[in-house]
Length: 241
Image (cartoon, rainbow, N blue to C red; front, side):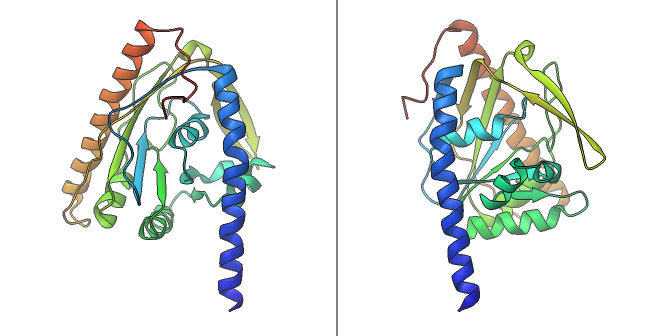
C-alpha cells in the first residue's frame, strides 16, 4: 500500500510541475520567439515517441510546449546535476541518460510507453553541429520504436544559428556546453507517424530504422528552414494548435 501511495503522489507531482511550467514556456515562446509550427498530421492518441534534431539546449522545452501534453524526455544525466534545473527535471519525471547505462533509460522509457505516455528523444544523442547539419542518429529511438510498437513522430527544427548563445558550465568537475536560443525565428515541422516492427536484437535492422527516422527528421528540418526563409516575420505562437 505504501508503494502504491508514493507512486500515486509521484504522478501527481509530475502532473503539477508539467501543468505549472507549460504555460510559462508557452508565454515565453509567444513573447520572445517568432514561432513557425506546422503539423503534417495531428498527433495520434496514446503512446508515441517524439523524435527531433537538437540544434539548441532549449529544444526540449519548446518542443514539449508545442506538443501540448505531458511528455517525458530522455536527457543527458549531466543536466540533472545542475542546481534547481536538476531538481525540476527529476520531479517532472524526465529520464536521465547516463554514460554506459543507456539500457536503463530505454527500459524506463518503455515503461512509460506501455502506460500510454508520450516520450521525447533526440536521436543524435547530443547537440547538433554548432554551425548547422546533423549528427548520425544513435539507435535508442529505433530500439524504443521496435520494442514498444509505438509510432515515432519525426520533428524537424530550424533556427538561426547566429542567434545561439554558447555558455560553458562546470558541473561537478565536468565542462558542459549549452547553446541557448533566447529569441528569434524558430521553426518546427512534425511529420506523419512512422511505425516499425522486426527484431530488436537484429543490429543491422535497428541501425536501418534509426537511419530512416533521422532521414525524416532532416527532411522536416529543411521544410522548417524553407518556411522561415519565405516568412521570417511569422509568429504563430502555437495558435494553430
